Amino acid sequence: MPPLNLPEQVDQLRTLAHDFEALHARVRDVSYTPGTDALRQIRPLLLKTQDLTATTLARLGALDSSAYTGIAGSRASLECLASVVVASSLAGTDLASALYANPYEGAPFPGYPADGASVRTARHAEAIPKMTGHLADAAHQLDLSATGCHYVATGIRSDLAAIREAAATTQRAAGPSLTGTQYDALKSFSLGGCRLYESSQRGLGVTRVATGNGTRVSIATFRALAKRGLVNRDTSTSLFRGQKITVTEDGQHALARPRPAVTATPPAAKTTPKPSAVQGAHR
Image 1 (tube, helix red, strand yellow):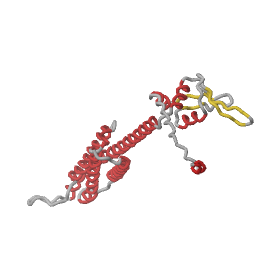
Image 2: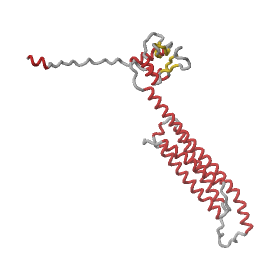
Image 3: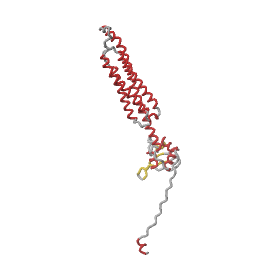
Image 4: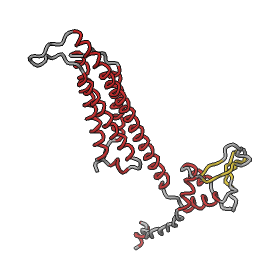
Protein backbone atom coordinates (compact mmCIF):
# COMPACT_ATOMS: atom_id res chain seq x y z
CA MET A 1 0.00 0.00 0.00
CA PRO A 2 1.25 3.52 -0.73
CA PRO A 3 2.53 5.67 2.14
CA LEU A 4 0.19 8.36 3.42
CA ASN A 5 1.04 11.61 5.16
CA LEU A 6 -1.13 11.09 8.24
CA PRO A 7 -0.43 14.50 9.84
CA GLU A 8 -1.64 16.07 6.59
CA GLN A 9 -4.76 13.88 6.72
CA VAL A 10 -5.44 15.13 10.26
CA ASP A 11 -5.22 18.74 9.06
CA GLN A 12 -7.53 18.01 6.13
CA LEU A 13 -10.10 16.35 8.38
CA ARG A 14 -9.98 19.30 10.78
CA THR A 15 -10.58 21.65 7.85
CA LEU A 16 -13.45 19.45 6.66
CA ALA A 17 -14.98 19.54 10.15
CA HIS A 18 -14.80 23.35 10.19
CA ASP A 19 -16.46 23.45 6.75
CA PHE A 20 -19.30 21.26 8.04
CA GLU A 21 -19.65 23.53 11.08
CA ALA A 22 -19.84 26.63 8.89
CA LEU A 23 -22.44 25.00 6.64
CA HIS A 24 -24.42 23.88 9.69
CA ALA A 25 -24.61 27.50 10.85
CA ARG A 26 -25.76 28.65 7.39
CA VAL A 27 -28.53 26.04 7.20
CA ARG A 28 -29.63 26.70 10.77
CA ASP A 29 -29.87 30.46 10.21
CA VAL A 30 -31.17 30.49 6.62
CA SER A 31 -33.96 33.00 6.01
CA TYR A 32 -36.26 32.68 3.01
CA THR A 33 -39.65 33.39 1.57
CA PRO A 34 -41.43 30.36 0.07
CA GLY A 35 -41.20 30.24 -3.70
CA THR A 36 -38.39 31.56 -5.88
CA ASP A 37 -36.55 33.13 -2.95
CA ALA A 38 -36.44 29.78 -1.12
CA LEU A 39 -34.92 28.13 -4.18
CA ARG A 40 -32.31 30.90 -4.39
CA GLN A 41 -31.38 30.56 -0.70
CA ILE A 42 -31.39 26.77 -0.33
CA ARG A 43 -29.82 25.73 -3.65
CA PRO A 44 -26.24 26.82 -2.73
CA LEU A 45 -26.58 25.03 0.60
CA LEU A 46 -27.45 21.80 -1.19
CA LEU A 47 -24.56 22.19 -3.64
CA LYS A 48 -22.10 22.83 -0.80
CA THR A 49 -23.37 19.78 1.07
CA GLN A 50 -22.82 17.61 -1.99
CA ASP A 51 -19.32 19.05 -2.36
CA LEU A 52 -18.44 18.22 1.26
CA THR A 53 -19.87 14.72 0.82
CA ALA A 54 -17.56 14.17 -2.15
CA THR A 55 -14.59 15.48 -0.14
CA THR A 56 -15.41 13.15 2.77
CA LEU A 57 -15.61 10.23 0.37
CA ALA A 58 -12.18 11.15 -1.00
CA ARG A 59 -10.69 11.25 2.53
CA LEU A 60 -12.22 7.84 3.26
CA GLY A 61 -10.81 6.38 0.05
CA ALA A 62 -7.33 7.76 0.76
CA LEU A 63 -7.21 6.22 4.24
CA ASP A 64 -8.76 2.92 3.18
CA SER A 65 -6.22 2.38 0.38
CA SER A 66 -3.16 3.28 2.47
CA ALA A 67 -0.93 1.59 5.04
CA TYR A 68 -3.05 3.24 7.73
CA THR A 69 -5.31 0.16 7.68
CA GLY A 70 -2.46 -1.80 9.30
CA ILE A 71 -2.57 0.33 12.46
CA ALA A 72 -4.47 -1.13 15.39
CA GLY A 73 -7.83 0.60 15.82
CA SER A 74 -7.90 2.06 12.30
CA ARG A 75 -11.13 0.21 11.51
CA ALA A 76 -13.08 2.37 13.97
CA SER A 77 -11.79 5.53 12.28
CA LEU A 78 -12.76 4.25 8.83
CA GLU A 79 -16.23 3.25 10.00
CA CYS A 80 -16.72 6.65 11.64
CA LEU A 81 -15.69 8.45 8.45
CA ALA A 82 -18.09 6.25 6.48
CA SER A 83 -20.84 7.37 8.88
CA VAL A 84 -19.94 10.97 8.02
CA VAL A 85 -20.57 10.13 4.36
CA VAL A 86 -24.02 8.87 5.39
CA ALA A 87 -24.79 11.91 7.55
CA SER A 88 -23.73 14.44 4.91
CA SER A 89 -25.67 12.54 2.25
CA LEU A 90 -28.77 12.62 4.46
CA ALA A 91 -28.25 16.36 4.94
CA GLY A 92 -28.29 16.72 1.17
CA THR A 93 -31.48 14.66 0.97
CA ASP A 94 -33.11 16.85 3.63
CA LEU A 95 -32.19 20.02 1.74
CA ALA A 96 -33.53 18.51 -1.48
CA SER A 97 -36.73 17.59 0.36
CA ALA A 98 -37.04 21.20 1.53
CA LEU A 99 -36.84 22.32 -2.09
CA TYR A 100 -39.42 19.69 -3.06
CA ALA A 101 -41.79 21.00 -0.38
CA ASN A 102 -41.26 24.56 -1.59
CA PRO A 103 -44.45 26.03 -3.23
CA TYR A 104 -43.42 27.11 -6.71
CA GLU A 105 -45.32 29.85 -8.55
CA GLY A 106 -45.54 28.36 -12.04
CA ALA A 107 -48.71 28.65 -14.15
CA PRO A 108 -51.23 25.76 -13.91
CA PHE A 109 -52.33 23.56 -16.83
CA PRO A 110 -54.63 25.19 -19.40
CA GLY A 111 -58.21 25.29 -18.20
CA TYR A 112 -57.28 25.60 -14.54
CA PRO A 113 -57.70 28.96 -12.82
CA ALA A 114 -54.61 30.79 -11.60
CA ASP A 115 -54.00 30.76 -7.85
CA GLY A 116 -55.49 33.67 -6.03
CA ALA A 117 -53.91 35.42 -3.07
CA SER A 118 -55.83 33.27 -0.60
CA VAL A 119 -54.76 30.01 -2.31
CA ARG A 120 -51.15 31.17 -2.44
CA THR A 121 -51.23 32.05 1.24
CA ALA A 122 -52.68 28.64 2.08
CA ARG A 123 -50.03 26.82 0.02
CA HIS A 124 -47.26 28.78 1.77
CA ALA A 125 -48.75 28.08 5.20
CA GLU A 126 -48.83 24.36 4.41
CA ALA A 127 -45.28 24.29 2.99
CA ILE A 128 -43.41 26.29 5.65
CA PRO A 129 -43.63 23.68 8.48
CA LYS A 130 -42.50 20.94 6.11
CA MET A 131 -39.57 23.01 4.84
CA THR A 132 -38.63 24.05 8.37
CA GLY A 133 -38.57 20.41 9.46
CA HIS A 134 -36.37 19.36 6.55
CA LEU A 135 -33.95 22.23 7.18
CA ALA A 136 -33.73 21.34 10.88
CA ASP A 137 -32.96 17.73 9.99
CA ALA A 138 -30.27 18.87 7.55
CA ALA A 139 -28.67 21.06 10.19
CA HIS A 140 -28.62 18.12 12.62
CA GLN A 141 -26.93 15.83 10.08
CA LEU A 142 -24.32 18.49 9.30
CA ASP A 143 -23.57 18.84 13.00
CA LEU A 144 -23.06 15.07 13.22
CA SER A 145 -20.76 15.24 10.18
CA ALA A 146 -18.54 17.87 11.84
CA THR A 147 -18.37 15.85 15.05
CA GLY A 148 -17.41 12.71 13.12
CA CYS A 149 -14.58 14.47 11.30
CA HIS A 150 -13.20 15.80 14.58
CA TYR A 151 -13.43 12.32 16.09
CA VAL A 152 -11.50 10.70 13.23
CA ALA A 153 -8.84 13.43 13.25
CA THR A 154 -8.35 12.97 17.00
CA GLY A 155 -8.16 9.20 16.56
CA ILE A 156 -5.47 9.42 13.89
CA ARG A 157 -3.50 11.91 15.99
CA SER A 158 -3.64 9.47 18.92
CA ASP A 159 -2.49 6.67 16.62
CA LEU A 160 0.49 8.79 15.53
CA ALA A 161 1.42 9.50 19.15
CA ALA A 162 1.27 5.79 19.95
CA ILE A 163 3.45 4.96 16.94
CA ARG A 164 6.04 7.56 17.94
CA GLU A 165 6.10 6.29 21.53
CA ALA A 166 6.50 2.68 20.37
CA ALA A 167 9.35 3.69 18.07
CA ALA A 168 11.04 5.63 20.86
CA THR A 169 10.68 2.68 23.23
CA THR A 170 12.15 0.33 20.63
CA GLN A 171 15.01 2.70 20.01
CA ARG A 172 15.71 3.02 23.73
CA ALA A 173 15.53 -0.73 24.16
CA ALA A 174 17.86 -1.35 21.24
CA GLY A 175 20.33 1.46 21.91
CA PRO A 176 24.09 0.87 21.72
CA SER A 177 25.20 -2.47 23.09
CA LEU A 178 26.48 -2.58 26.65
CA THR A 179 30.06 -3.51 27.31
CA GLY A 180 30.77 -6.47 29.56
CA THR A 181 31.83 -4.11 32.33
CA GLN A 182 28.64 -2.08 32.04
CA TYR A 183 26.51 -5.23 32.03
CA ASP A 184 28.21 -6.54 35.17
CA ALA A 185 27.73 -3.18 36.89
CA LEU A 186 24.06 -3.12 35.92
CA LYS A 187 23.67 -6.66 37.23
CA SER A 188 25.19 -5.62 40.56
CA PHE A 189 22.86 -2.62 40.79
CA SER A 190 19.85 -4.89 40.19
CA LEU A 191 20.74 -6.92 43.28
CA GLY A 192 20.21 -3.89 45.50
CA GLY A 193 22.29 -2.36 48.26
CA CYS A 194 24.21 -0.06 45.89
CA ARG A 195 24.82 3.60 46.65
CA LEU A 196 26.57 6.62 45.25
CA TYR A 197 28.83 8.43 47.74
CA GLU A 198 30.91 11.57 47.77
CA SER A 199 33.82 11.94 50.14
CA SER A 200 36.48 14.54 50.66
CA GLN A 201 40.09 13.67 49.96
CA ARG A 202 42.78 16.33 50.20
CA GLY A 203 40.12 18.99 50.08
CA LEU A 204 38.60 17.62 46.87
CA GLY A 205 35.21 15.94 46.47
CA VAL A 206 35.54 12.36 45.18
CA THR A 207 32.46 10.45 43.99
CA ARG A 208 32.49 6.67 44.20
CA VAL A 209 30.12 3.75 43.81
CA ALA A 210 29.59 1.16 46.53
CA THR A 211 27.92 -2.13 45.57
CA GLY A 212 26.25 -4.65 47.84
CA ASN A 213 28.11 -7.66 46.42
CA GLY A 214 31.53 -6.04 46.36
CA THR A 215 31.75 -5.60 42.58
CA ARG A 216 33.98 -2.68 41.71
CA VAL A 217 32.16 -0.15 39.55
CA SER A 218 33.86 3.02 38.36
CA ILE A 219 32.06 6.34 38.46
CA ALA A 220 32.51 6.55 34.66
CA THR A 221 30.60 3.28 34.22
CA PHE A 222 27.80 4.51 36.49
CA ARG A 223 27.52 7.79 34.58
CA ALA A 224 27.41 5.95 31.25
CA LEU A 225 24.51 3.81 32.49
CA ALA A 226 22.71 6.80 33.98
CA LYS A 227 23.06 8.80 30.76
CA ARG A 228 21.29 6.02 28.87
CA GLY A 229 18.49 5.94 31.44
CA LEU A 230 19.32 2.45 32.68
CA VAL A 231 19.84 3.45 36.32
CA ASN A 232 18.55 6.12 38.68
CA ARG A 233 19.83 7.53 41.96
CA ASP A 234 17.84 8.86 44.88
CA THR A 235 18.66 12.56 44.83
CA SER A 236 16.45 13.20 47.87
CA THR A 237 19.35 12.16 50.09
CA SER A 238 22.81 13.66 50.36
CA LEU A 239 25.76 12.21 48.50
CA PHE A 240 27.66 12.22 51.79
CA ARG A 241 25.03 9.88 53.29
CA GLY A 242 24.79 7.88 50.07
CA GLN A 243 22.20 7.97 47.30
CA LYS A 244 20.47 4.66 46.55
CA ILE A 245 21.00 3.34 43.01
CA THR A 246 18.13 1.53 41.29
CA VAL A 247 17.75 -0.07 37.87
CA THR A 248 15.08 1.44 35.60
CA GLU A 249 12.63 -0.50 33.42
CA ASP A 250 14.91 0.08 30.42
CA GLY A 251 17.77 -1.25 32.51
CA GLN A 252 15.80 -4.41 33.26
CA HIS A 253 15.21 -4.88 29.54
CA ALA A 254 18.95 -4.51 28.95
CA LEU A 255 19.65 -7.18 31.58
CA ALA A 256 17.17 -9.52 29.89
CA ARG A 257 19.49 -9.72 26.90
CA PRO A 258 22.57 -11.96 26.94
CA ARG A 259 25.77 -10.61 28.44
CA PRO A 260 27.97 -9.10 25.72
CA ALA A 261 30.76 -11.40 24.63
CA VAL A 262 34.30 -10.37 25.47
CA THR A 263 36.07 -9.18 22.38
CA ALA A 264 39.63 -10.41 22.19
CA THR A 265 42.20 -7.71 21.63
CA PRO A 266 44.30 -8.57 18.55
CA PRO A 267 48.00 -8.89 19.29
CA ALA A 268 50.15 -5.97 18.27
CA ALA A 269 51.96 -6.46 14.97
CA LYS A 270 55.63 -7.24 15.30
CA THR A 271 57.99 -4.72 13.75
CA THR A 272 61.53 -5.42 12.68
CA PRO A 273 63.89 -2.69 13.88
CA LYS A 274 65.71 -0.91 11.12
CA PRO A 275 69.52 -0.97 11.24
CA SER A 276 71.03 2.28 12.36
CA ALA A 277 73.27 4.31 10.13
CA VAL A 278 76.27 3.45 12.35
CA GLN A 279 75.63 -0.29 11.96
CA GLY A 280 75.44 0.13 8.22
CA ALA A 281 78.72 1.99 8.18
CA HIS A 282 80.61 -0.90 9.90
CA ARG A 283 79.43 -3.40 7.33
